[in-house]
Image (cartoon, rainbow, N blue to C red; front, side, top):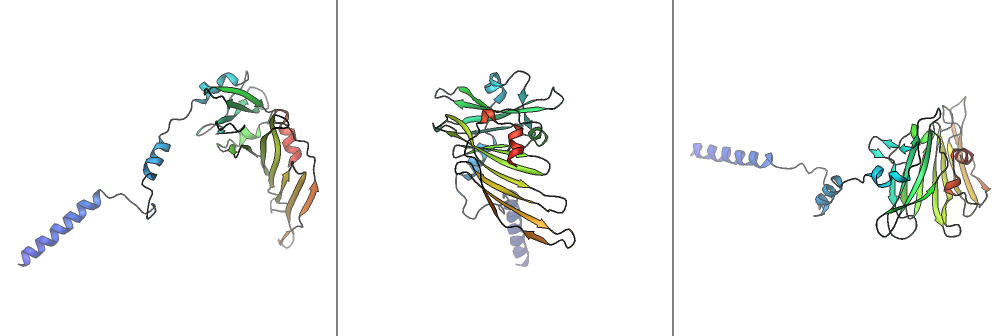
Length: 241
């Protein structure tokens, strides 16, 4: 009787061990996962990427090449002109000169799936090539966001296709400065060029006590003349910081 009981226990342990060998770790999954979640993740993970050099290579100016991060070309897709077709914005570079150059190019998708070259920026300088961020671009609600970084500050540029002008124009910016070594002067500005309003918030750090103090918010009026993407370059960026 005791032998039979021991055999039963051993059999149960054996079956439990076999069951756990094929069990998938579920600690990171939701308690009620969507039945389509796994297949959706798998399809996105293995979705083929576009061959952007082949697709858009004819639009790249002579002596320029696609700027690429560790994960591929610096590209964003999304609707920019309200036709519900995903357009493409991409960064190209020229490394042949003493001071590297970079341009922002736009390609609009036609109903037949082909792409038509759109606006092109002026020289954005070497900074985008120094900080090659795969998320340099994003397109949200028909607004192109360009995240421009330098050593001590960064700025997000917002361009939208304005019916009044028929092309992409700078409608707003969000800038941030890191200040000095202790953070004195850190802060940023938010500018809306459609309304002509800029709001600035900075902090001051006392060098002797190390006490940080938020400075009073500053508001100022700025020009509502919208700069077009084709007339935008690194000089414009530095004036906006």
